[in-house]
Length: 310
Image (cartoon, rainbow, N blue to C red):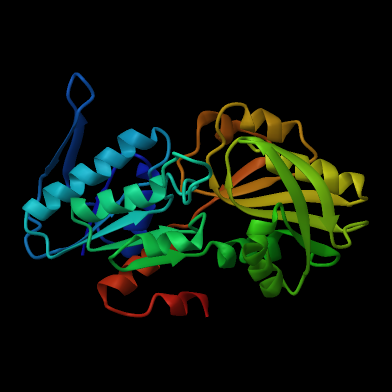
């Protein structure tokens, strides 16, 4: 096995490397003066099983190009198999046509990754499950639910817990954690008036006097989570915390979370934390290095990945 780290999230790549006790393959990923990406693999990869770790997070286009160019370099270097490891799959929210003359960019990115030379893809908590069907190569979609459930069990009193989905689309994800914790489930019905703006309409389930934990896959502007937290407190919730797999946290999201009733927002390190996130008093990151590292080892050994979640 060879592991190559892109520049999007070097600390996560190093943590995965440490878990697997496999040093990162030496590679030079740099920019020309006009910001054109250039990649040079500095070790022999002929006949090797190579994993390229790269989240396509901010700056999404630069990190995506790094991934594509790196895989092209590996393919031309005669690597036996190339696995694109995307802890965060960017463009996943563009998984369908939302109106006339709009793209399905998640499918376009899937085509680009395949054509660049990927033989398989490993990712974490895809925004929409149907994106797996956009690829004509094998794809393993890992789930952060076991990591979140373990953290909740270790840090929070299990009595009066209720897991809350901030929208109808996230019910399956919230139910999976509620089942692991043997907790109740509540759902927030919201109506989105326009992109990036959400309005809470109704809460399905009993939250009065309960400790509510919101569960989502992506937190970007944090508007949905903060509005949901306000609605839950207005319905009599004792406290509100939140768990989100991918902490995009763009713009004023960190300040929004700090000013909200959310006691703590927990994200994974699928996206490199900004300085604002690192110094925030109510945002915490937990690592998914062992989860991704174990999945990579199983892929390399041709063992079951789905049994990770049994």
